[in-house]
Length: 70
Image (cartoon, rainbow, N blue to C red; front, side):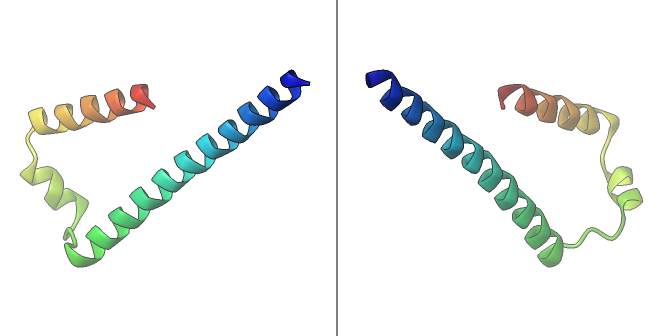
């Protein structure tokens, strides 16, 4: 009897976890779209000219660390 409640609780926890990840991704996408609308970047080439190689490496390392945390 108790196993049924525990499995139901774990299933609901899993569903909430999936919805939380989806919500974070959607909010991140909306933030990128809003930021791009209010602060447009002229071009990717212009952005790459302003960033140094060290900045690009730091961005790649930070994003890979963030992916490892998720």
